[in-house]
Amino acid sequence: AQSVTQLGSHVSVSEGALVLLRCNYSSSVPPYLFWYVQYPNQGLQLLLKYTTGATLVKGINGFEAEFKKSETSFHLTKPSAHMSDAAEYFCAVKLGFKTIFGAGTRLFVKA
Amino acid sequence: EAEVAQSPRYKITEKSQAVAFWCDPISGHATLYWYRQILGQGPELLVQFQDESVVDDSQLPKDRFSAERLKGVDSTLKIQPAELGDSAMYLCASSLSDRNTGELFFGEGSRLTVL
Image (tube, rainbow over all chains, first blue to last red; front, side, top):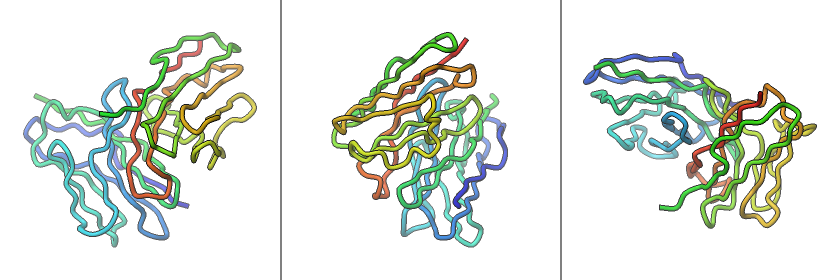
């Protein structure tokens, strides 16, 4: 069965520092991979996705993620954090017709 | 920009009462999802429709929850009777198809508080 693990329920960085949010998945075949962001009391919106092809994918707001098949990982990064990046981030995998989500990582950005 | 519409945004009810949530997906999206998100957790799929047919409702507590998408467009999720543990955000999402590689488009959610 497929599963998604996000390491760290909370991550705190200083403004301007590197953001790294970790995601590992468990699947017998490479799934489609997604990162979503959720602001307080709102729905989720897509940051980026990996389906096939280039393993480094770029998304909105300066985020990017790299699919590493050997590590079954899809970590999310941003070179320089901004205060507006403070939110909850969810990694998701889609295999077949099902999409499942990780438990989420809340990102705090300190001034 | 097309959006997924949900109502109500907030609902406060007492336990044992009935509650209903409505969702209107993006026009042309064949697949509709209802997720439940408990505070501090990721979304958990309750039910998935492809057009008017249920594709997956394995995690739907069928003794108290029901969902329908009669004409394959908008959808209603009902809880009767509500229990304290049902307090959560109920998220509706849609996608073009359940077989493509595309992402889910989410509404703003309906936050339920059961007293």
